Image (cartoon, rainbow, N blue to C red; front, side, top):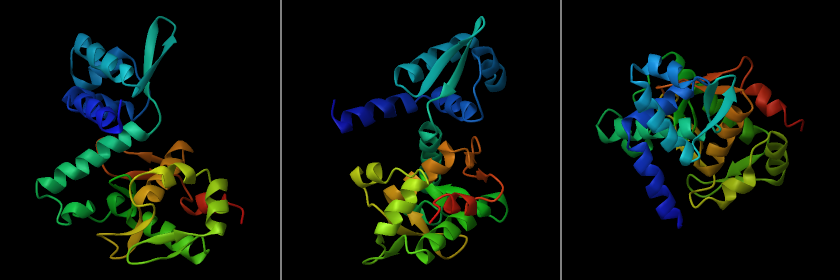
Length: 231
Protein backbone atom coordinates (compact mmCIF):
# COMPACT_ATOMS: atom_id res chain seq x y z
CA UNK A 1 0.00 0.00 0.00
CA UNK A 2 1.39 3.40 -0.99
CA UNK A 3 1.46 6.38 1.38
CA UNK A 4 -1.40 7.94 -0.57
CA UNK A 5 -3.51 4.79 -0.31
CA UNK A 6 -2.83 4.55 3.44
CA UNK A 7 -3.85 8.17 3.96
CA UNK A 8 -7.01 7.67 1.86
CA UNK A 9 -7.95 4.60 3.91
CA UNK A 10 -7.46 6.54 7.14
CA UNK A 11 -9.47 9.46 5.77
CA UNK A 12 -12.41 7.16 5.07
CA UNK A 13 -12.45 6.10 8.71
CA UNK A 14 -12.15 9.68 9.96
CA UNK A 15 -15.03 10.54 7.65
CA UNK A 16 -17.35 8.86 10.17
CA UNK A 17 -18.61 11.46 12.63
CA UNK A 18 -18.94 8.79 15.31
CA UNK A 19 -15.26 7.83 14.89
CA UNK A 20 -14.24 11.46 15.35
CA UNK A 21 -16.36 11.73 18.48
CA UNK A 22 -14.88 8.53 19.87
CA UNK A 23 -11.32 9.75 19.29
CA UNK A 24 -12.09 12.99 21.10
CA UNK A 25 -13.78 11.15 23.97
CA UNK A 26 -10.86 8.74 24.36
CA UNK A 27 -8.51 11.70 24.31
CA UNK A 28 -9.73 12.38 27.84
CA UNK A 29 -8.74 8.87 28.94
CA UNK A 30 -9.55 5.19 28.53
CA UNK A 31 -13.17 4.05 28.66
CA UNK A 32 -15.47 1.07 28.21
CA UNK A 33 -18.21 0.78 25.59
CA UNK A 34 -20.87 1.54 28.20
CA UNK A 35 -18.93 4.60 29.39
CA UNK A 36 -18.65 5.92 25.85
CA UNK A 37 -22.30 5.21 25.07
CA UNK A 38 -23.33 7.21 28.13
CA UNK A 39 -21.00 10.14 27.42
CA UNK A 40 -21.84 10.36 23.71
CA UNK A 41 -25.53 9.53 24.09
CA UNK A 42 -25.29 6.76 21.50
CA UNK A 43 -26.40 3.12 21.47
CA UNK A 44 -23.78 0.56 22.49
CA UNK A 45 -23.95 -1.43 19.20
CA UNK A 46 -23.09 1.72 17.26
CA UNK A 47 -20.20 2.45 19.62
CA UNK A 48 -18.89 -1.11 19.27
CA UNK A 49 -19.09 -1.02 15.47
CA UNK A 50 -17.06 2.17 15.18
CA UNK A 51 -14.58 1.11 17.84
CA UNK A 52 -13.94 -1.98 15.73
CA UNK A 53 -13.14 0.25 12.75
CA UNK A 54 -10.75 2.31 14.84
CA UNK A 55 -9.13 -0.79 16.29
CA UNK A 56 -8.63 -2.40 12.88
CA UNK A 57 -6.99 0.82 11.69
CA UNK A 58 -4.62 0.77 14.67
CA UNK A 59 -6.02 4.00 16.11
CA UNK A 60 -7.28 2.50 19.37
CA UNK A 61 -6.24 -0.47 21.46
CA UNK A 62 -8.25 -2.66 23.78
CA UNK A 63 -7.40 -4.45 27.01
CA UNK A 64 -9.44 -6.73 29.20
CA UNK A 65 -10.31 -5.47 32.68
CA UNK A 66 -12.26 -8.16 34.49
CA UNK A 67 -15.39 -8.80 32.46
CA UNK A 68 -15.10 -5.53 30.58
CA UNK A 69 -12.93 -4.31 27.75
CA UNK A 70 -11.26 -0.95 28.11
CA UNK A 71 -10.42 1.12 25.03
CA UNK A 72 -7.69 3.75 24.71
CA UNK A 73 -6.00 5.74 21.98
CA UNK A 74 -2.67 4.46 20.69
CA UNK A 75 -0.60 7.52 21.53
CA UNK A 76 -1.54 11.15 21.03
CA UNK A 77 -1.38 11.22 17.23
CA UNK A 78 -5.11 10.43 16.67
CA UNK A 79 -6.23 13.30 18.92
CA UNK A 80 -3.74 15.63 17.22
CA UNK A 81 -5.09 14.61 13.82
CA UNK A 82 -8.65 15.47 14.85
CA UNK A 83 -7.49 18.82 16.28
CA UNK A 84 -5.79 19.54 12.95
CA UNK A 85 -8.96 18.68 11.04
CA UNK A 86 -10.95 21.02 13.27
CA UNK A 87 -8.52 23.85 12.54
CA UNK A 88 -8.68 23.18 8.80
CA UNK A 89 -12.48 22.99 8.84
CA UNK A 90 -12.72 26.33 10.64
CA UNK A 91 -10.28 27.86 8.16
CA UNK A 92 -12.21 26.65 5.11
CA UNK A 93 -15.47 27.83 6.67
CA UNK A 94 -14.07 31.33 6.96
CA UNK A 95 -13.87 31.26 10.76
CA UNK A 96 -10.07 31.50 10.67
CA UNK A 97 -8.88 34.85 9.41
CA UNK A 98 -5.42 33.49 8.80
CA UNK A 99 -6.74 30.94 6.33
CA UNK A 100 -4.00 28.50 5.42
CA UNK A 101 -1.93 29.63 8.36
CA UNK A 102 -4.30 27.71 10.57
CA UNK A 103 -3.68 29.89 13.64
CA UNK A 104 -6.21 32.70 13.95
CA UNK A 105 -9.27 33.85 15.83
CA UNK A 106 -7.83 32.91 19.20
CA UNK A 107 -9.07 34.86 22.20
CA UNK A 108 -7.30 35.66 25.44
CA UNK A 109 -7.23 32.96 28.09
CA UNK A 110 -6.38 29.30 27.86
CA UNK A 111 -6.28 29.25 24.06
CA UNK A 112 -3.83 32.12 24.02
CA UNK A 113 -1.51 30.49 26.55
CA UNK A 114 -1.13 27.22 24.68
CA UNK A 115 -2.97 25.73 21.71
CA UNK A 116 -2.43 23.63 18.64
CA UNK A 117 -1.68 25.25 15.30
CA UNK A 118 -2.36 22.23 13.12
CA UNK A 119 0.04 19.73 14.76
CA UNK A 120 2.48 22.01 16.55
CA UNK A 121 2.41 24.20 19.68
CA UNK A 122 1.25 27.81 19.41
CA UNK A 123 0.38 30.67 21.71
CA UNK A 124 2.52 32.10 24.50
CA UNK A 125 4.04 28.69 25.20
CA UNK A 126 4.87 28.03 21.56
CA UNK A 127 6.57 31.39 21.11
CA UNK A 128 8.52 30.95 24.35
CA UNK A 129 9.68 27.51 23.23
CA UNK A 130 11.04 28.80 19.92
CA UNK A 131 12.73 31.74 21.65
CA UNK A 132 14.45 29.33 24.04
CA UNK A 133 15.65 27.13 21.18
CA UNK A 134 17.10 30.18 19.42
CA UNK A 135 18.62 31.75 22.53
CA UNK A 136 20.35 28.47 23.45
CA UNK A 137 21.71 28.06 19.93
CA UNK A 138 19.76 24.88 19.19
CA UNK A 139 18.11 26.52 16.18
CA UNK A 140 19.37 29.34 14.01
CA UNK A 141 17.74 31.42 11.25
CA UNK A 142 17.96 30.11 7.70
CA UNK A 143 16.59 31.48 4.45
CA UNK A 144 13.19 33.10 4.65
CA UNK A 145 11.08 31.30 7.25
CA UNK A 146 13.39 28.31 7.44
CA UNK A 147 15.25 27.40 10.63
CA UNK A 148 18.40 25.28 10.86
CA UNK A 149 19.00 22.74 13.61
CA UNK A 150 22.53 23.00 15.00
CA UNK A 151 24.71 20.24 16.40
CA UNK A 152 23.92 21.49 19.88
CA UNK A 153 20.25 21.31 18.98
CA UNK A 154 20.46 17.71 17.80
CA UNK A 155 22.01 16.69 21.13
CA UNK A 156 19.61 18.74 23.24
CA UNK A 157 16.43 17.62 21.49
CA UNK A 158 17.51 13.99 21.63
CA UNK A 159 17.93 14.28 25.40
CA UNK A 160 14.48 15.87 25.55
CA UNK A 161 12.97 12.85 23.81
CA UNK A 162 12.23 14.59 20.50
CA UNK A 163 12.37 12.22 17.52
CA UNK A 164 14.50 14.37 15.22
CA UNK A 165 15.21 11.53 12.79
CA UNK A 166 11.51 10.93 12.14
CA UNK A 167 11.02 14.65 11.58
CA UNK A 168 13.83 14.69 9.02
CA UNK A 169 12.22 11.80 7.13
CA UNK A 170 8.99 13.76 6.73
CA UNK A 171 8.17 15.11 3.28
CA UNK A 172 7.15 18.47 4.72
CA UNK A 173 9.33 21.42 5.71
CA UNK A 174 11.62 20.39 8.55
CA UNK A 175 11.63 23.53 10.74
CA UNK A 176 10.03 26.87 9.95
CA UNK A 177 8.83 30.03 11.66
CA UNK A 178 5.02 29.96 11.82
CA UNK A 179 3.32 33.28 12.45
CA UNK A 180 1.47 33.27 15.77
CA UNK A 181 -1.88 35.06 15.54
CA UNK A 182 -2.15 36.22 19.14
CA UNK A 183 1.50 36.92 19.93
CA UNK A 184 2.47 38.52 16.61
CA UNK A 185 5.72 36.59 16.78
CA UNK A 186 6.65 33.20 15.35
CA UNK A 187 6.42 29.81 16.97
CA UNK A 188 8.07 26.62 15.72
CA UNK A 189 6.27 24.89 12.86
CA UNK A 190 7.08 22.14 10.40
CA UNK A 191 7.94 18.52 11.10
CA UNK A 192 10.22 19.46 13.98
CA UNK A 193 7.48 21.53 15.62
CA UNK A 194 5.15 18.53 15.38
CA UNK A 195 7.82 16.25 16.87
CA UNK A 196 8.30 18.63 19.81
CA UNK A 197 4.58 18.69 20.60
CA UNK A 198 4.43 14.91 20.29
CA UNK A 199 7.26 14.61 22.84
CA UNK A 200 5.46 16.95 25.24
CA UNK A 201 2.27 14.88 24.94
CA UNK A 202 3.96 11.49 25.16
CA UNK A 203 5.85 12.53 28.30
CA UNK A 204 2.69 13.78 29.99
CA UNK A 205 3.98 17.36 30.07
CA UNK A 206 1.04 18.49 27.96
CA UNK A 207 -2.46 17.24 27.22
CA UNK A 208 -4.87 18.04 24.42
CA UNK A 209 -8.23 19.26 25.67
CA UNK A 210 -10.87 17.08 23.98
CA UNK A 211 -12.87 18.88 21.30
CA UNK A 212 -10.77 22.03 21.53
CA UNK A 213 -7.46 23.44 20.33
CA UNK A 214 -6.35 24.22 23.88
CA UNK A 215 -3.24 22.45 25.17
CA UNK A 216 -3.09 22.07 28.94
CA UNK A 217 0.51 22.22 30.15
CA UNK A 218 1.84 20.79 33.41
CA UNK A 219 3.17 23.33 35.95
CA UNK A 220 6.54 24.73 34.92
CA UNK A 221 6.19 23.79 31.26
CA UNK A 222 7.60 24.27 28.72
CA UNK A 223 10.61 25.53 30.73
CA UNK A 224 11.10 22.19 32.50
CA UNK A 225 10.95 20.42 29.13
CA UNK A 226 13.87 22.51 27.84
CA UNK A 227 15.87 22.04 31.05
CA UNK A 228 15.54 18.27 30.67
CA UNK A 229 18.15 18.56 27.92
CA UNK A 230 20.77 19.14 30.60
CA UNK A 231 22.99 21.26 28.33
